[in-house]
Each structure stands twice: as C-alpha cells, then as structure tokens.
Amino acid sequence: MIETSSGRDRPWMAGPGRPWVTYGLIVSCCLLFVIGPASGLNPGYGTGGRLVEAQSTYFERWGVVPSALWSGAPDQPLAPLTALFVHGNWLHLLGNMLFLYVFGAMTEERMGRVQFAVFYLVTGYLALLGYAAAHADSAQTLVGASGSISGVLGAFLWLFPRARVTSLFPFLFFLPLRFPAWAVLIFWVALQWLAARQADDRPGVAYLAHLVGFTLGFLYAWGRFGRRARVGGAARASEGESQP
Image (tube, rainbow, N blue to C red; front, side, top):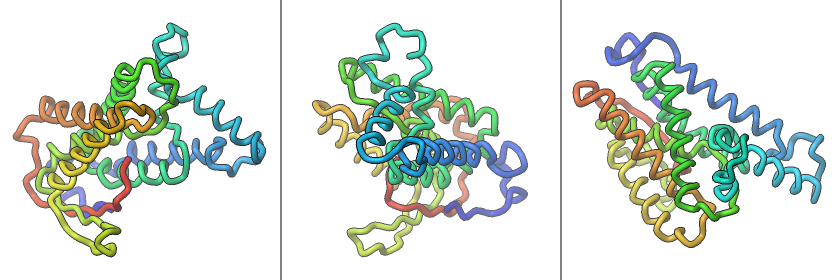
C-alpha cells in the first residue's frame, strides 16, 4: 500500500480528493470478474464442463484473439478495450489490482483524473495491439489489465524516481526489504524482457504487452511532463511480489 503524506503536503498533485479513477477501475474489474464465469461464483454458468465451456466462450467474446483481431470483423476493434476489464482467474485479478492500487493512486494524482483515465485505456489498448501484431497468427486469447498497469509503472518510474518501495520476497523468507522504486521497476522490466525472449515461440503469456505498455507509459510521462514535473521527495510505498 502507498504510504504518503496528505494531499495538502503534496504540491505536485493535479487536483484535490481521492484517486477515484483508480478506485473505479479496481471496483469495475473486481465486479465484472465476480459476476463472470472465471470466478466460479455465478451459479448461472453451471459447473464442471459447462463452466469451462462458458469461460472459454466468455474469454473469446471479450478478450483479444490475435488471429481474429485482423479479420476485419466490425466488433474486433473494441476487443483490446474490453479485454482490459477481463481476468482469467483470482490470482491474475488480485495481482493486477494490487499493482494498480500501489502505483495507480499517485500517478493519477499527478496526472489528474481525466488524463489518467485516457492514459490508462489508450496505453492498455496499444499494448495489447502491439502483442497481437507480433503474434498475428496466434489463436491464444489475451485478457487482463496488464498492459495498462505496465504503462502506469512506466509513468510512475519517470514521475517518482525517488519513491521507496517495500517488497516481500518469498525466496528471502518474506523479509521486507526497501528499495528505490526505480530499482524495483527496472528489475521488473528486465524480468519481462527475459521472459518475452524465452516465450517468443509460445505466445499466450503477454510479456511483450507488458514491455510495450511500460515503454509507452514511460515515454508519455517523459514527453508530457518533462523533468520539472518529477517528484524528488522520497515517498513511501509497499507492494507484494505479484506481477501484473
């Protein structure tokens, strides 16, 4: 969770109040997941084989299938947008929402609500579009907000280079360790890049979408806000290990 001073102590804030766009995105994704077939909580989708079939149909209807995206069907241009609000399982949802909550609130406050909302949707759309272009023949369905959240991480890295992040690492017995946000995020990018190289022949895990989103977010923040908008104070934050 982000631990920062109150809004009145942050002169860089674009506007007063809570980060309602971030909260709204989290609530929307969680609500759609719970009422959809992937959660397993909606009895209307049945159980067993019927539930699995409903999940497959649901993901294909609202997700991105690269081979279908370029088919010219009239509903396909909206697929990368709707896919941002669909998640495959509980771990996928919770990991994405954790990162959105940790890094989205401060980024939204810096950008402003409207600009952040547009940035989130456009970055996620382009990230999924980039992955689909690189794997145009793939029939693997892509869902999730990872591309958008990766964009938020990229923007956060530029806007808050000295923020401090407390991370829990299972391989170090869950010891809480504090690092600069830039070190954590650059390490995350390196992991995504290595994973993307290893997954080139096995499309389905959208590591490339993560990299595209992160790069777009970083470049947007750099071009839109410039060096003078960067926050030099060391804000405090904490996060788990899960990745979007």
